[in-house]
Image 1 (cartoon, rainbow, N blue to C red):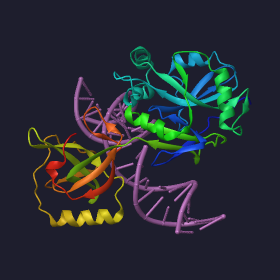
Image 2 (cartoon, protein in one colour):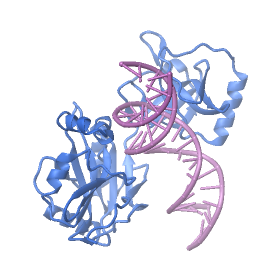
Image 3 (cartoon, rainbow, N blue to C red):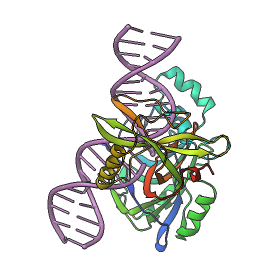
Image 4 (cartoon, chains in turn red, orange, blue, purple):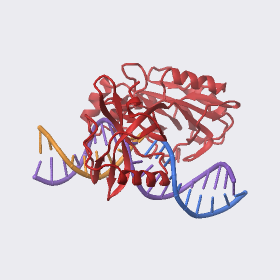
Length: 317
DNA sequence: GCAACATCGC
DNA sequence: ATTGACCCGA
DNA sequence: TCGGGTCAATGCGATGTTGC
C-alpha cells in the first residue's frame, strides 16, 4: 500500500504565555479548518481532524494538489479571508459544511479558500514522521509549487514573544510553538507543539442562567450600554466555573428575588430542553473570548473570575 | 416554505 | 473550541 | 505531587434533515 488510511493529526497543547526558546520555532495560528491532503497514486483526497472526508468541498485544491508528486501526505489549515483580509472562520465553514454539489460549485467562486501548509507526514510513499520538524520543512520547501492557492506557513526561530505581539496587534488567533527537532506524533497532543491564543477580555454582568433537568448549566451574560441605559445580552458562559462556584451561584440565585423581568432588550432564544431564569444584573464576571461574532456574541467564552463592581461599569469598549 | 432539531467545525 | 473532575503512573 | 490522558459538560454558528 502506498499511503496509509487517513490519520488523525498531531495537535498542540495549550500554553497561556508566549516564550522565547532556541529549541522552538513559532508560526502564526491560522483560524480555519484542519485538513490533511493525501496524494495517492491515482487520486487526491482530503480529510479533516476527525477523519471526515472533505474532498468534494475543495475541488480547486484537488486540481492543484494533483500536480504534486505522488505518495505525499500534507498537513495544514484551510482558510478564507474576510473583508478585512483576516482569516474568517465563519466563511470557511460555509465551504467546509456544504454537501450538495450545486451549493459547493456556487461557493467556489464566492468564497475562495487558501491551504496554509505547515507539515508533511508522508513523502515518496514513506512515512517521514520520525524525521525532525526542520527536515520535514526542508522537504516541504522543495516540493510545494508557487501557487496563489497554497502557502507554506512561515516560521520564525527563537523569538516567540515578538511573534505573539504581532498576532495580538493584528488581531490574529494566536501562535503555535513547535520543537524544531520533534517528530510528528500522529493523533496526539504533546508539548512538542504548543498553542498560545490571543484572548479578548471583558467584564460582564450576570442577567440570568439556563437550566436543564432543573440544574444550572450556564450563565446569561450582558453588557451595559451607556447611551440608552440598557443591558444587552452577549452570550452564555459556563466553561471555567468549578463545582464549588456553581454551588455558590445556585445558593445566591435561590436567595435572590424571583420573578425578575428580563434584563436584556435582546434576550436569546432557548434551545431544546433548556429553561431560562432572569436575575437583576448585579454580579460582575470577568470573561475571555476569542472574538465577537457577527451578531455580537462572544466566540468561545470562558469565565476567568467573579468580581466586585458596578454592573453599570460593564460596558462595551 | 418554515421551524425545530441534529450534527459538526472551531 | 473551552474547562473541570477524575484516574493513573512516575 | 505533578503531568498526561480521558470523559463529559458547556459556548457560537453554519448546514442538513425532518416533519408539518
